[in-house]
Length: 418
Ligand code: NAD
Image 1 (cartoon, rainbow, N blue to C red):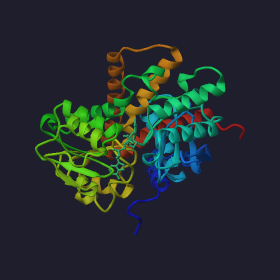
Image 2: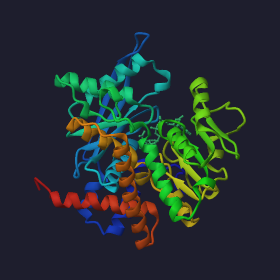
Image 3: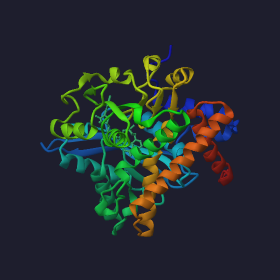
Image 4: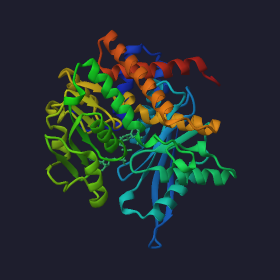
């Protein structure tokens, strides 16, 4: 029997295989898309606050740039592996193609535990990492953004390091940076906004009622907290949220703003009054209409997919569902909004930030929100109609769209030197 949590790269390649079969992809192009174009592994010596030198491992993986410059987040986590980052870079390629923005896919990672590091240590680590990958990145080459346990401050340090080497300020070298440095006002909420736009469209198609729908959110970081907050404001009933330490549940509904204030003071959602404490495993299996995994990959596996009670799963996180769990959810009639569609609002708003930086313009908030909404609705409709027409699940439909567009671009560019 296969592992409950498969190797992330195997899982990503299995998804590609499914899309390739549906598309009857040229075997040569399939081979090209299976592997990253380039991967750089780096060792990062950092002087810690106690004077000791620690060497961290990191990487930057660039999967495919046939449709435009590479684009992808940087993750700091103790469990980062090259396979995981490669899989996430591949997902980025499909995601940019699904939402039809002119980027390829990349991802970076550093194996570290930021929770145990001081701000000074994190700054030295980030600047060292930026220096080591400097030749690969840049506004027309590869544009980094935040991911798990990195944030706008991390992007500010990368932008500054890149700019120092260039000798002039290059705000378009990163996205997700602070507003004062040319960041985009809605970047922080954009991923969650995109998730909510997709949920809104799915709710319409499934003839559910947003006001009466209960929601469980796993992960209470940038994406999870914002998703819970926007859903709450839109009238959905958020009944449970969690972070890495565990979750809280109240069938009558909880106010995410109050939970956020509690987390700010106590460091976790745990201990929030008037709510039952649940483990992250229990949280996924709670009775609810909509489940929003917004933490890490491979949370819904063949071990728990039978026990998911939600009618809809909206994948705010990247790769939260294993391929085996995918099949089980589909067989059980659970409607899944796949990651490469659901969380593509993040990279779309990064694209908005980059375009504004390149053109030295500032778009009004209303205009930007409408653009994001329109692009997400278009992507949702294209995926949904592909799923209906081919009588397939939403993940396969999204992959067919994304992989198909990238394959077409690779074919059109041709192979040189051949
Ligand atoms: P984050 O670091 O801000 O938050 C991660 C959250 O997950 C934290 O609350 C953490 O406590 C929680 N967590 C960690 N391990 C957990 C576990 N085992 N069980 C439950 N919760 C756990 O990260 P983020 O930016 O919110 O990213 C979350 C997911 O969304 C990731 O998969 C990321 O790749 C994806 N994503 C993020 C963006 C973005 O714009 N930030 C865009 C697209 C996709």
